[in-house]
Length: 338
Image (tube, rainbow, N blue to C red; front, side, top):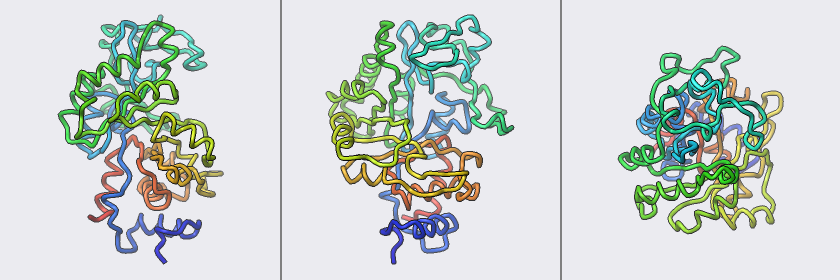
C-alpha cells in the first residue's frame, strides 16, 4: 500500500514519522514539493522585512520572498509585517508621543506607520520579533537590531536581481488607508509596473489580501496570482464558499490550525480544508511555520522538519509560509531526492 495515496489517520502518521527519519526510500517529489514562502523574509534569523532578512532568505533557497506593504503618511510604501511598528522597530523610544489607538487596525495602543513620514521611519532601527520571548526564547540576540528597512521599490529591485521563483505582496487595511487619503493599492500597482513585473515572465507575482476588493483591483494584471488570506480557523470549504473565492482569487492562505487541529498540544485530526480547496483547483498555502519547539504539537517531537513532512506528504499543501526558509529547504534537499 502506498501511503501517499491514502488518507486514513494511521497511514498519515506512518508517513510523518517515516519521512522525518527517512526509514523508507525517499520519494521523488522535487517537482511537486510545496513552495517555500517567507514570512517577512528569514525573520527567524534577522529582524523581519529588512534587507538582511531578505538576503538571508534568498541565500537559504526560499522560492518566494514576501513583502507586507505598509504606508508612511507621505505615501511611501515599505515592507513591514504590521502597520504598528512599535515592537518591530525602535519607534517606541524615538516616537513615544505618536502612540495612539486605531480600532480599525487593532484594539491596543501602537505607533503606526501612517502617522509618520518616511524620513522619520527611515531613522529607526529594526527590532527582531521573538514570538516566545516571555518563555525566554530569544531569536538571534546578536542581530537584534541588524539590517535596514526596505521601501517596496528596493524590495522589488532585490527580488529582480535574484534567482527566486517569485514574490508575494500582501496588502492590509486598504479601506482604512483610503479614508486617510493614502492609496496603498495604487502605490503597489505603480511600483510593480515601474519594476516591470506587469510583463515579468521569469518570476511569479502573488498579491495577497483578506479584502476581496483589493484582490479584484489586481484582476487587470493577467500574470498576477491573487491570494485570499483567511485568518479565521476553518475545517473545510463548502461549494458556495469555493465558488465565491474563485470570483477574485485562485489561491488561499490558511493558518496551520485550519489544516492540522491540535488539542492539548496533541494532533487530533486533519481537516478537509486543503483537499476541498484543491478539488476546486484552488492553490493552498499553509503557515506560519516556526522553528521554536513551543510552536509545535507534541506529535512533531519538537522537530520542525516533522511538521514540514506532515504538510508535504500528508496534507499535500502547495506552499509553506515560514519564518525559517532554511529549515524547509534543508528538509527538501535531504529527503526529497530528485
